[in-house]
Length: 323
Image 1 (cartoon, rainbow, N blue to C red):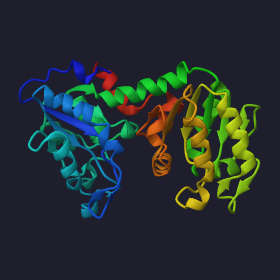
Image 2 (image 1 turned 90 degrees about the horizontal axis):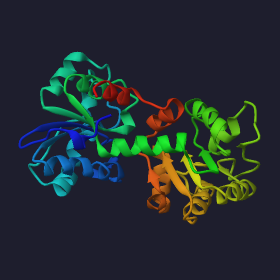
Image 3 (image 1 turned 120 degrees about the vertical axis):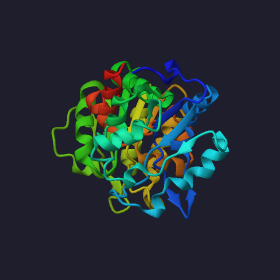
């Protein structure tokens, strides 16, 4: 991937920036701005170079229909404040058009016609073979945004050269999407800790470095005290920790104790390089006040899992082909 830093951006250059703007909007207000905040480095860089960023992305799953509640226009006040009015253009939700998700060539050409160059700044959707991810970069000179580079560099470090002991924590409810990641890290991690519903549903072999919950609390919707103590003992000796998926039903404060206690153990140890990702995990840790204490927070959920399992993503491969 070639960095946006190498792009020929001059006065008036229009830059199509595929952004991760998939944030929760409630009562026309943005609930949490983390995904938007990490875009600002790239967007401001383009503006400082006298270019004009064309901010493109999606919110939610409108399934090819116009859904007022999922309009990107609710993000306009945020970008006006952070970037300055008139210094950017914000496109409407790309997924309002069904051609986005089918990677329609005509739609890709329509999007490409709006700009002079392309920048991918949406790690979270780099695993999607959509028009704005793989179609547009085939039509324009294409570059990687600063955040996309940080995501891939950080996750590659965990995969290829982590400081050991490496402890991987995987929770949540979707075992089918996380099984490939669990299998890969069982080969390279010192310990893999399973929590959440995944910890109850693991039916495969249990190698010595795979640690399953030994007890549960609160109607089996959270890990129990014995498991928390075991997890904490292992984590305290770690130098690198990767965490994907909450350890209980975090939406209910009665079932967030395991996630909270494990987060405390990780963040109170300054020698641990900690990486966390996944929408539910980020929401849980943000609600608990721990999110900013992690070394690196990935914007990806499904994309992070696929990258960790395969070492690449279709959106990244498209950029590499255009080098």
